[in-house]
Image (tube, rainbow, N blue to C red; front, side):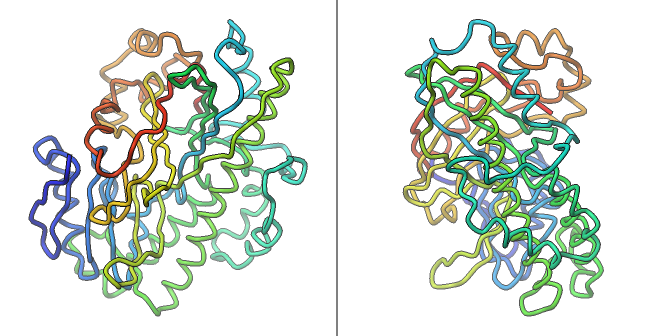
Length: 397
């Protein structure tokens, strides 16, 4: 579908979703964002749903300003995927051992490694700039500097919520590895600190929603946030790269006879800020639950823990600020899902997937998400499908 234009306050709201199907709270958030004085454009993805401050599944283009709450607390959250040389027949019949080995190698939930993982022991990880990256830690907000040890030990860990590690099959029975994670606790603490700072600034006192407080260009607060924001986005990228290396090691050790090899890793943020130019204007583009889909850009759009995911290639649609959806998108809150569904429902909806099926992950049940096929169909002018994947192993935090 092409987009539907809905009237906003300062800019029109371009929607790749049917406005009639978007909950009232999310539509109000979109109108609130469209009222910001610095807004230059707003694009809405088909996985749109209510979020904190700004809707998840929105692309916010502003000139000379950025909203830290719109970026969210998991700065740089995103996806990585890699196609392997393995075929379905190379996998063991009982996948429980493989899942267990992945969980041993990659800490989940609030867990961390006992000692920081040495990236230099992984061939092909790409450690250029690694030492410089950590050297910049002392330049972050003073409020988080006591977290250096924790940040180092959480590098290469999954987290919880909708984060996951998966072993998947594509339609031709090739094995893929895929994971979803972000900047862990250090990103969360940096975000919360700067969101609090923005709320106190005088120019934000009369906003329709205090969660839309912004930093303005050429101010010390903006400079400090940009420094910390881009560092956290880099942390998230390194975190996924390290996890992917750990995951590949598990596959090598568990399937030595198959001698697995791996194609180049596809990686994309979906909660982040990028400096981009449209119509000759330099903009700060916030993708909150959206991926970059410039012409030829590879991206990953996952479903839920019991449905398929898609590898896509961007078509470069400037009306959407070269963006696409970041997933299926929730159709009910976590609390609503917990009240509505049982572990029996979870077992039925994840049949054939080696994964947790206990009460701790009911909020991630497939029925709590929109149908991924419909979400993909609604953005045919944003991306083209390269591969469809179906998980056989899913590790949750």
